[in-house]
Length: 217
Image (tube, rainbow, N blue to C red; front, side):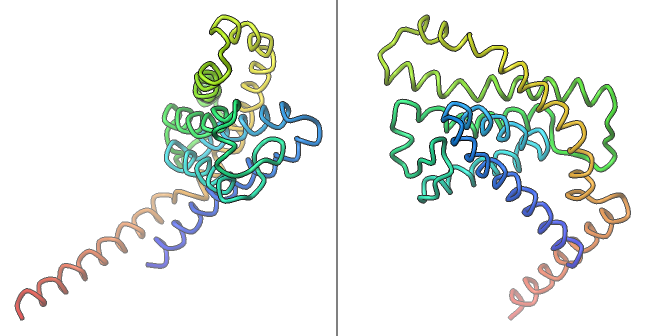
C-alpha cells in the first residue's frame, strides 16, 4: 500500500497547507480587520480552485475548526464560536461556501492539466463564482443581525466591487500557475495510478479472503 499511502499523505498535506495559508493571512489584521477579511476570503476560494471541491472545502473547514477551538485565525485575531454569532459572523461561513463552489465548478485537478487559455477561462469563472458565493452567508447574516435593509447593505458593499474584480484576477492567475503542479503532486500519472489501483484491488482481495474464511468457521 506504499503508493496509496503516499498519495493520501500528499493530498492531506496539500489540504492542510491551504488551510494554514488561509489562517496565516490573519496577519493582515495588523493593517485592518477589513483587509484581513478580504485576503482570507480570497485564499479560501483559491483553495477550492487549486484542490477541487472536496479538498478545498476541507481546507476551509479545517481553518474554521481551528478558529472555533480557540486559535486566533479569524479577522482581528478573533477565535471561538462567539465569533460566528457576532454581526460579522456570516462572513466566516462564507469561507467554506466560497471554497466549495469554486472547487465544484473547476473540479478536482488532473495531472495532465496545463496553463492553457481554456484553463484560464475556467479558473476565472470558478474564482468569480466562489467569491460571489462566499459573500452570500455574510450578507444574509448581516441583514438578519443588523436590522438594515437589503438595499442599504448592497449599496454599502457595491463600493467594494473594484476590490472583488482585483481579487478575481489574482485568484485566477494563481490558480492557473499553481493548480498543475498541485495536480501532479496529489494525483498520479498513468503508471502510478495503475499501481495505486492494483494495491487497492489487492487489499480488497485480501479482505474478501479473510471474510470468506471467517464465514466458513
